Length: 107
Image 1 (spheres, helix red, strand yellow):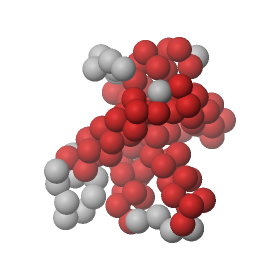
Image 2: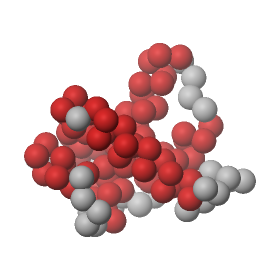
Image 3: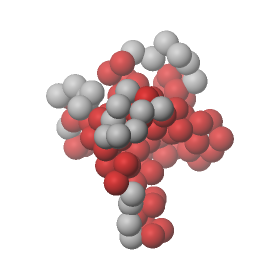
Image 4: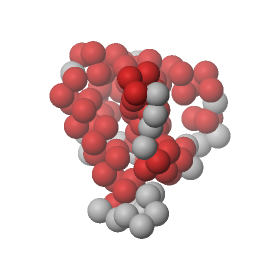
């Protein structure tokens, strides 16, 4: 998956569920990595959201090298379009919470 394809996919509502899961899982993993590097701690709901998206990955998408590749593409997207990337990350978090990813909390 090239960066151009990822940018295009992130900007459309027609993303298939497996691709959306892959993009959102990468977004959440990067968010967790960033917070960990800044504060050394991550709030519990972040882990629930991460796990919710992880459950939606296919076997191929669960491969560590593929996840690293997708995270690199999402990081490129963040560099090219920080506002778009932030909006996409927020949409991923909101979607997971709305679907019940965080116990006791539904959008």
